[in-house]
Image 1 (cartoon, rainbow, N blue to C red):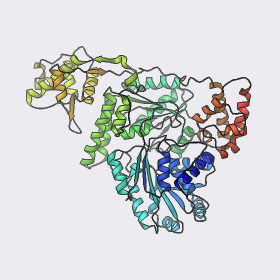
Image 2 (image 1 turned 90 degrees about the vertical axis):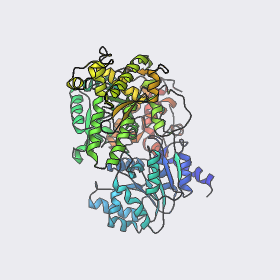
Image 3 (image 1 turned 180 degrees about the vertical axis):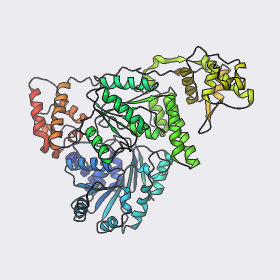
Image 4 (image 1 turned 135 degrees about the horizontal axis):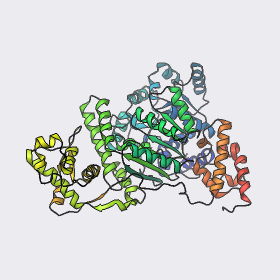
Length: 614
């Protein structure tokens, strides 16, 4: 079969099983590479359709199964349920199954009744499982969330190191394809090396998610809770995730939201398996508006209609943040990614890094990543550009994205040259006094004119910069120090307890050779509303959502697995009158048309005569 014939068949499968008439960016190239039997690495942002890149080839390979290595039980179940809902023969083997269920599924696999099998990497340590697979041809191994291979990645999972030795035991080497949403060049190199890939084709999709609005808001715990309550009130009919750093914060915030009468559930590793499963299902089935969780929740969650992700605390690195934030707007519709930041978050992250490992090299590496995350939260530059630059995304773009708080909310931007000169001068004078450098907290104390014992003991009250900013709130001084550091006018030197030094750029500011412009963030700077779509078909869309929820309850299936919000919006826009027109709707394939077509067409018919939405 020629390459053109392969891709034509791939498009036919895309339309028939998944209801789409064209591939997204990079999907076609990745699929073509796999069909050409090349080892392949695909680094594509959340929502770019990575799963289809191995699911479609799996359906096209006639001889043999595709083994998908997946990190979480919930991820496997969601993807297998979604595939079965599309009419694809897929299964999973994991510890959630009883021995009888496991045996039955293994018999299905050996009998050739399934094409795609999901397993956790730990399963590859089972001699019995490996023995069963010895009677089955494995045509392809797809490694999902492949960044888990690398100790430099944010979700390092040692069991992923079992994959390459397992492949080496197979009588015939299968195609190996690795997929992840976020990977630095260092992590990408690790993936190729540790999977022992042979001259792989590497595809890096643009990391940009234009439908996501990024914003950072600063404040203490009370201000954060106020923000969340106001935001959730404005988004009553939308699903979202709130991430917190610790189990304690998850418990306190969830209890707070429940008292405020929000439909909230909690998720963290301290809960029982049954409690976590119930919380996740309540969220996936739209019984809960919001899930408050630690980073234990979410990897691979396919719920497409998450309209917002709020980080109650700052994560430890950009990779973790972008992957978690990227769980919003997987359907391509507008969504918000909101980081609520306070200086206390930095110290919480530093503590978590300290207790996570005794490896000093890894600890120092993680502290560098934390510094970059803090620069994102405090720098004042375009948030989207900051993220894309971190991932070395060099695709052409404007200096400002027009879709983040730092680009849109310019009214807080001001000429801070005089304030910067005061701060930089204070850092310099403190250094000259004893030849030592000091941290941001002590510099803030000197500038604000603190009478703290240490200030007196060191004699810093004698400096000309002592109390020079006494009328400026301490929090604002600290924010300006962070912003100057993020913009490289100051350097934070050291890992656990960094001290400040002026840079060459900072010296230019002190000499009057450069100006400094800063943006001071505020809580609740953006007024949120739910009326952002601007279509005139909201009544139709809401009625289709109600039908979707009814079917979800009847068939015990997550609503987004029936149709995503984006599918329903396209349906409401097109207003199909028959089955043939329904096939033109995004996400409607032959299988779903047969299963749900009549019910959705009946709802649309109610509006067809009275509403012109063509």
